Image 1: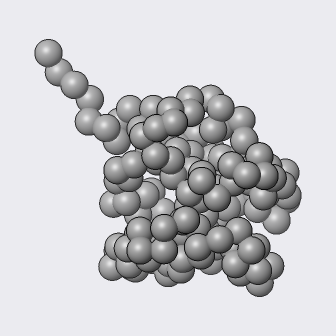
Image 2: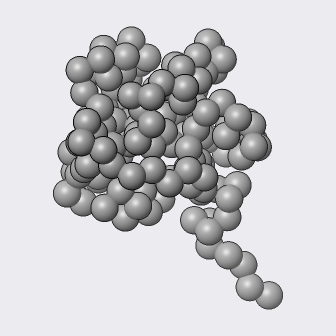
Length: 142
C-alpha cells in the first residue's frame, strides 16, 4: 500500500490559483501573518534563507498597515487571525484588483478541520496545514 506524502494531499497542502507576478508586486517577497510570533518569525527566517524577502506580522492591524505600503508576492495567513471577523480582510483582498497577482495562502492547524472548499470559499488561493512544508512554498514562489 502506498501513501501520498502530506504535501501532495489537498487536505494538507494545495494551491488552487496560480498567479503571475506583476510590476506592482515584489516577486520574491512574502508577508507572514501568524498569531504566534515565534512561529511566524521562524517561517519568515526559513523563507529568507531560501532567498526570499520575508517579514512577519503578529496581528491584523500590523498586517493592514504594512500592506498599505507594500505589495508582497505572497501572504501566508494564520487562519486564527481571521476567525473573529469572518475573514473580512481575506475576502476584501480576494476582490481587490490590487491583489490580483498576490497569492494568499491559509496556514491552518490540524484541528478544527476546516475543509479545503471552505477555506477556498473565504478567498484563499491555497492551503498549508500544520506542519507546513515551508520549503514547498519557497519552491512555488521561486
